[in-house]
Length: 350
DNA sequence: AAATCGGGGTC
DNA sequence: GACCCAGATTT
Image (tube, rainbow, N blue to C red; front, side, top):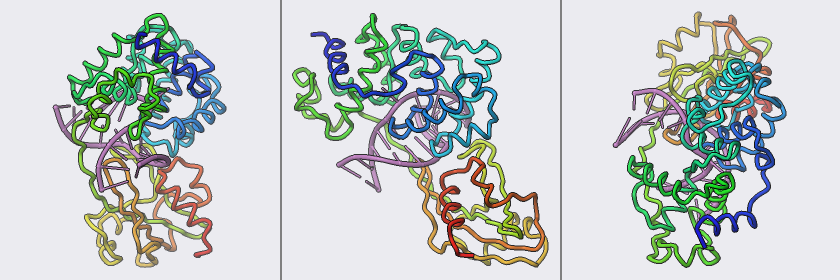
C-alpha cells in the first residue's frame, strides 16, 4: 500500500471528534489554525468555542475592540497572533466583503498566515493540493524516512516540504493533511511512540536502526534569560489602583499590568526607592510601601524566567489616572498578573 | 540564520 | 530541567 492510503486508513479509524472538522468554512478553519499555532489542541479548544460564540462571523470579530479580543485571548500566549487575527478580520470584512482569499498564494499574504496556515486553509477549505508541514509532520517523516536534516534549518524546511508534497494525496489533500498531523499527535508521539502497533513499523527507518529517540533533529535552543520584575500595586482610597498598557516589541505587547520597575537582581525596599521611575510615581513623602511576597514568583516563559515581586503602595494622592481594583480583571492581563490578582483580591490580607 | 514571542503538558 | 506544541515574524 501507498503511504497516503495507509495513513488515511489509520486516520479514519482513529481521528478525534473536533469542532473544526465539522466544517469547511474558511472563517472557522482560519480561526482554529491561528489559535493552534504552537499550541496543543486541548489548550486551544476552549478558546475556539469562546471565540465562535462571541464572534459567529468574521464581521463580528472585525467590529470588536482590540482590548475585547485580547481579553478573550488572555492565557493563550503569543499575543501577536491575536493582534494579527483582529487586523486580518477587519481586512477580510471591510476590504473583501467577508470573503476569505481562496488560494495558497493569496492566503499567504494575510497577516499571521505563514506557509503552514496557508497550506492548511487552502487544502481544507478549497481542496488545493498543498502539503502542511508542522511539528507533527517533521516528526513523522523524519522517523519513517530516517531524515536527520535539522528541521529548523533552511535545508530542512525545504526538504520536508518537498517530501510532504510528494507524499500528499492530491485527490484529497484535506484528509491527508489532517491525517498526518493527527497521526503525529496521537501515535508517532515525541516520547514513547506506539511503534509496536504502528502501521508503518515494517518500513520505518528510524525504528529499523533504533534512532526513534534521536529524530527529528533540531538545532540548538537559545538559553533562558533571568529578569527581575517589581510591580507597584497601588491600593488607594476606594480600592483604586494604577494600570499601564505594555507597548513595544517585547513580551505581552498590548496587555495591561501594574507599573513595573525592572532591576538587575532581587532588590529590597531601600534599593527600590532609589529608582528614578519609583520616585516619579511617589510625588510626596506621604506613602507606605510594603512587600507582598518575600519569595519571588517565578513565571517561566520560553526564553525568560521572570522573578517577580509585588509591592503594595498606598499614598494620599493618586499619582496618575486610577482604575478600580475590581475592574482590573476586565482588562487583558498576562497570566502572571491575573494569578496575583486572583490571590490578592480573595485575600483578607488587608 | 538566529532570535523572539507564552503558557501548559510530558517525562 | 529539557523538550514539545496544527508557526510567524523580526532582527
